[in-house]
Image (cartoon, rainbow, N blue to C red; front, side, top):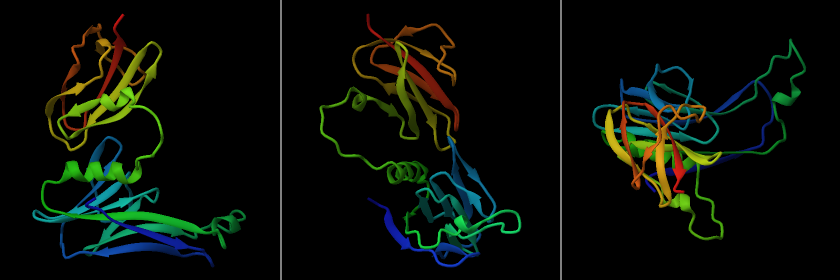
Length: 229
């Protein structure tokens, strides 16, 4: 893996403080971008919530910082910061002792990945891999293992049964207009575009092993598939 992973364990003691992980860089006046649901957003140096990662880069090099459930990130004078723990409370409003978690063990996991220019697809992929690691289990080859999508900047974000159909949601992750296809397992005879509530928005048409794709940057595509009768 190109990621450098970290694990920090603490047992909080005291109150009204914050613990952060800092990663100094040699980049100055770089571009700060955060992953948001189904996209990437350029943001200010102040602390913001990032879905899986924040990236700080200039035209040549950059550093991606991946979080796992600790989404508060920012950049200060070339240093990337990740908030791990806040012992914060409003004691003048309500009892707040539980907010400090004193004596409760905590474990935080995060990672970084240095990179060159034009690495958005790999950053998104590594963000998914870090937050959704493979789970080992016994069993046969699932039919869902045969699903695939192209080009690389399109990701599957949802796949599930929906009545007598299968619903699949994909999105373009880097902001580029693309053409491609979703490869589907054998046994599906037709497909139709759908809305976010899993309702077909057009007539079903024949599926010959793949669904053609044409997506604008950050566009979400929803589809329903019917099995052959």
